[in-house]
Length: 358
Ligand code: IPM
Ligand code: MG
Image 1 (tube, rainbow, N blue to C red):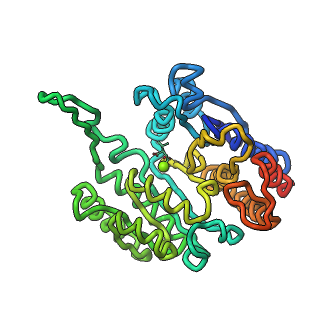
Image 2 (cartoon, protein in one colour):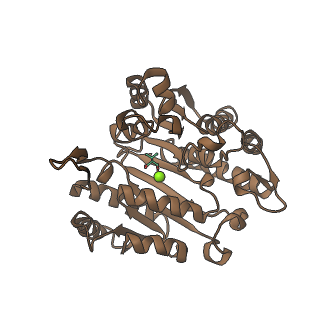
Image 3 (spheres, rainbow, N blue to C red):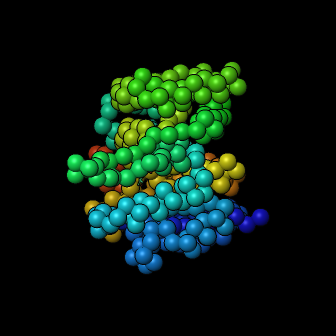
């Protein structure tokens, strides 16, 4: 059956990197029998400019009809002064919550070819391979009440609310445990149970779900310690499971261990395996339009799409290997350059991956 893929390039470097990922999808379609149909849509600042909204009803409609979504990035300085509900980021958050994409998988894997690109010592990071499972549709990102109000004294007060229902914690923990079963069978649940009641409950729920997975070892870590351990000894982790905001912060940190945030893909899945796939980096407005951004995180997001939604794991492996071979040949975008390597453009990097696939 033909899978419908909605492509949402977004803002900044989004269109350039997505263009390369689309080339990859098209070559898999023409030479590897991938049965897909591509459709394009607007999100973020691009949608605001065209339709006055970061997530137009039409985009949401397309997204609901699609089996998978490939997204570039959203945001840029020109939209920062807009009221929060019109900012590009709302496009992303609206897709995540509207489609109930509660499970965000953010693998941090260090390609052996890029050990020198990491800011950490090779002996600390080489062989790094962890999976961060971030809750994506709840927590402080969506909790009510929220906003800024003016008190009687005239002083303003800002409020956001960290709130989780047990069922929300249960389902994200199950995703983490299921993934751990395909890996090293270790889950570390991240919380701030020493201060925040909500995450104390999170820990209790993690323990309860852990009992369903006696073959998986469960540990717990406070988020501040987790941040430290990620830069101190990141290889101790197999699967990390976190709240929405803790995962946002820790995944940037985990990404940097691998040399460049330009290498890391992500999948955001609903309960049925429908997913939105995007690089974990942002729209990088400072380098937009220069043809120097790294498209590999987006291309590797296609690999996650093949694995998790399109159920073509063998093609995902073929694509991962193609990326490895390009790196083996010494091709690097500027963000992952190292001495003796050839610096290539966004487009040339995409072409190199496509050439390996042909
Ligand atoms: C991410 C991003 C988003 C987030 C922003 C762009 C809303 O930082 O996907 O990590 O905070 O979730
Ligand atoms: Mg983030």
